[in-house]
Length: 137
Image 1 (tube, rainbow, N blue to C red):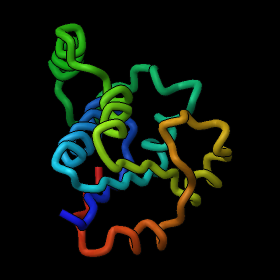
Image 2 (spheres, rainbow, N blue to C red; image 1 turned 180 degrees about the vertical axis):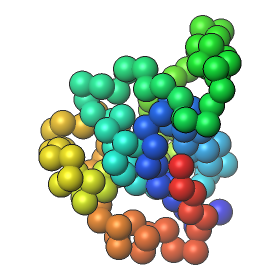
Image 3 (cartoon, rainbow, N blue to C red; image 1 turned 90 degrees about the vertical axis):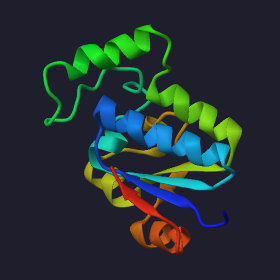
């Protein structure tokens, strides 16, 4: 599996961040490279001063979603940030901040959690994606 799984992480809600982290972990276990591009609210979730903060659920989640996610974490499921940290230990997982989103949100690399490997433009991200799968979350 040489072609990477490329994930554009646009949303910053806990359910979508968790989904992206699980895809990254699964791909890393299979030996597949993973590239994640953080845009807008997905990028905002990776701010060093906010990475551990509860981020709510997507608008289409029903009232039972929050308690279900909280119960899973209480039962021992690790949070999305720790899943991504483990994914990086398991395989080739790169996380980059979108350069345009960095400009719009007025962020510098130093504002981001060390999980973020660097800053990348859309063209570079898409070129590196090659013929691999591209997920938009």
